[in-house]
Image (cartoon, rainbow, N blue to C red; front, side, top):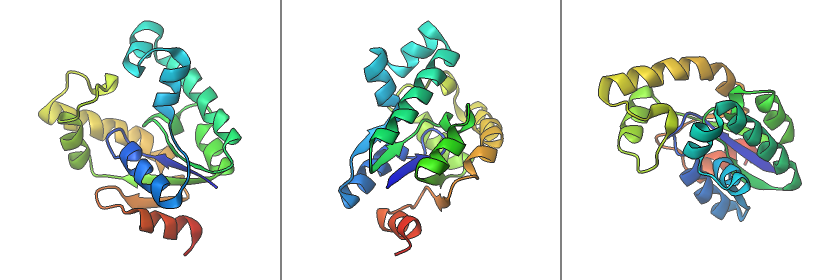
Length: 167
């Protein structure tokens, strides 16, 4: 089975996905990393040199390549479900799990993150919180189409396994 982790940037899709993959003994794929490998550029470089439309096209192509994986944990980008028919694709190709977090938790994580995030670059404090609230409002329509919704602040691999596999 393919399990697609979705949610806003900073909700822990990659770090949690690695833990879940180890627990299930599944391969792990970070969609952003797959785009970086294929393009030879970092995600911020793709955004700055080629633009968001180019990034979203590459992201879609990498997402469709996940069909080659009979099973795996796929950490998607925060915007992945919101473009093209990506959410429908993921729901048909496997199980989708939304790691839902409060805007305040996300703002705290993103403000102190080590990784550069093009969308929130230059935002701090209240400005960052307001940006997150606004973007989350736009994206939640897609996120809420997930098969499973789980609280991202306290998620444990066993919870997701139970929800996805009904154990």
